Image 1 (tube, rainbow, N blue to C red):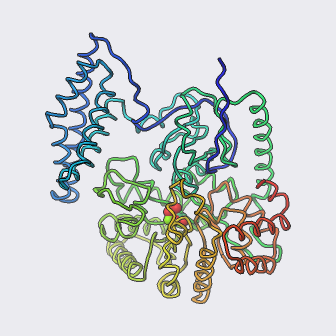
Image 2: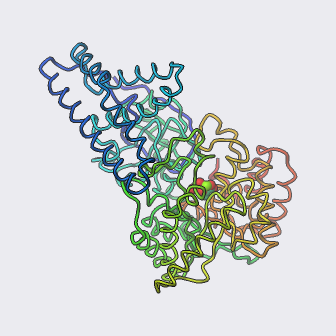
Image 3: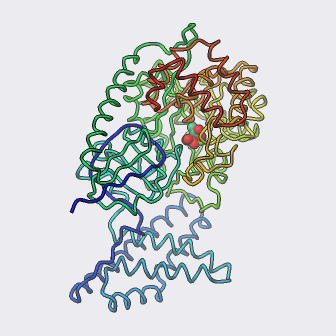
Length: 587
Ligand code: PEP
Ligand code: MG
């Protein structure tokens, strides 16, 4: 029987329309089915369990050794607790006896026992025992992963073209995706500016996030349509729906092609002011896309992806090679390298960063780098050395006050001195900037401007911190408003303070690629827009359609409004008046 068509609305994460077969990827909670096993298979299930325990133990011993060598024996202690979980005879015996009694697959039984353990521990009054939950969870997941087969490899080894459906995808999951086999993806959770959503744009594949119940409605093999522009998913579409989306898809492709006609034209307003049009990249392989879409330079290179999906830390030499390859390919145009922004929704398994209650407010970005100057300086030295081979700029993420900026700059100076001593070349005049993505930085931007050569406004974080809205939480996505008057005021004061101090101000958050906001940002005086490569043609189209005085007038009007909704409605109206063909695409 033909399955019923289901339409779901989520949050648009990456534009475009695509259809294909669903591949359900993900969390152990729903991928492990209740599979009965025959009596004669029990020995084999037991062997699989023992093998997974040995493999997990070896993995943990390996990490423990590395951490105690690279950090300290104290840091490695957490892994001793993990080993205790593996050797817990009660847990192992319970799994074995349940397997023999219930005759279900070992992964199903193990997961069941694990859940019960976690429940029992969480209900205990003893704080020490409660704290063991995260150890049990960590080790349990590791064992499950080894039982199921390496989860990390799944997305990079897809044998056919699919649409990935998941409860959640981490940025490191998306970083392993092969564009050629993942046609698009959709997830239950996530927000518009989560790094998973940002990665989808980099991969140039349509994506929708925050669908809440998607994984409950889809089975692997179902036919799926993703409309990433409007945030819609159709499961098992009827023939008529399929036809409609095929037509929409053709229109979308034709429009994107038409915009590419602007590729080689300058990014200049109608009255002749040149505006910087830059692109954001995650990995060096993104450079051809930057060029294909006509951005002039790179305004944000998120270097933390270099540290992901690997067991060790990248060496200075490896980093030097990657950064200089990007610098050389973009030469003479600038490349803005952002130092590692670990934390928030980006985790690095090889570093011993404890689980945090509030990862976005915790040990993240520059805070981590200043605490680990060994890791930070390796990166600074690599960036400096690469600066001799192209035009590099450097910027620090998550600066919250002048102290951090000064400390980071002092480490940069140390690195320069070392390189000089070693006779290694670097660009003495490399610009060094601060990202403005924390409200305290925006509010003290007059002070920060004295120590920076430029500012780059990171609106993804600035919005989440100013409006107290977690950027990856779909439940409160309605509160995540780039057009909120508080955000416009902060942006205006950063631009004004930057200009007063004689430095330029760019923006590299997703807001810079949101055409609804382009005219307002231009009118507020923004000097550089850095967007995902696919967004740059339409931003250029808007900038080339307006004069500065027109934009200033629109910005002035926006600043007088009281709510984000009012600003958005007003900005859309102005866009329709000034650039009608682009505005039509919004509908
Ligand atoms: C930002 O916060 O706007 C930004 C560009 O940095 P990231 O998205 O990597 O946090
Ligand atoms: Mg940020």
